Length: 125
Image (tube, rainbow, N blue to C red; front, side):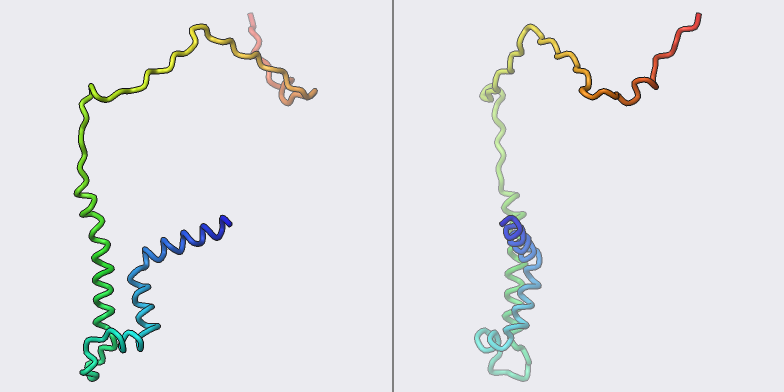
């Protein structure tokens, strides 16, 4: 299930990123249908338009959709609230008496590695 969801989300991201390329591939696959339905120059077959005018319109529309996002961000209005109206939660009170730490337990295995090797230096008088 997770793989299907991940594949779906990656596909959506790629379609958004490669939007213009998808339009060109769709045009190449359906060139005859687009020429028949949307071509402006049907009366002038010597121009060999083949629906390129429709493709150009779609590409301009797709490119214009990307430019709308920064304009919407520029219209965001930020308001500054006075500090008196801002209510912060009270800090948590810690217990007055500190709890003692639990003493460390000895390892439960017999052979502790390195215990006999490392010793503190001896004081020579």
